[in-house]
Image 1 (cartoon, rainbow, N blue to C red):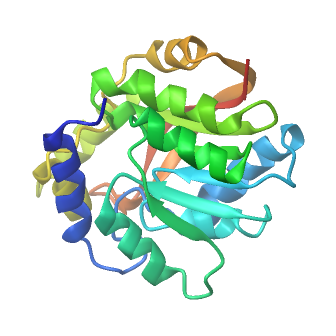
Image 2 (cartoon, rainbow, N blue to C red):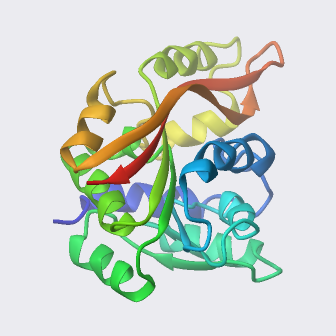
Length: 239
């Protein structure tokens, strides 16, 4: 099974139309607001001698920070255009980047065979995946962990939808970065409240720790406050 052609084209189109300016994608928050605090939650549970794989890495902002904490950092994304962005942004060549469809179980297994058990970082991938693809995304996390890896997964909750709707109803309509998400047919925060933990459990993942957080965006509401999207985070092991 692969992702739908419509979904693939939506992401290729989005990234192809996105400039290389940091923060140009609405979710491309600086690492200090994302991978830095998230790593502090993951590292007490993780073997930091293992590689780390950043699933849905986009332009690689978080991957580059993860490369400072683990011996090898690999960012993967469905979109070829996103991987091109990530490689251009990684001027110090601290990380590796590769195109990968997380719903392609054979390709995910091949990556695991190549690098061995790995830690996983995944921020906001399940909630915007097509519903029929979500179990495969969760299964990809389990495959990459193997026996020794640990994962940090953060996903938007349905409350995020209300924040986005409020942002879209500003006096001038949606702010520019949010408008681009809608124009490319991307669907943020479409997973139901208990869907994510159920998907993770069904994939054979055990929750070691979890909590509530927000995922800061690179866009503001009409009054100038930053858009922070409600989310849940999980630290996971396979089996």
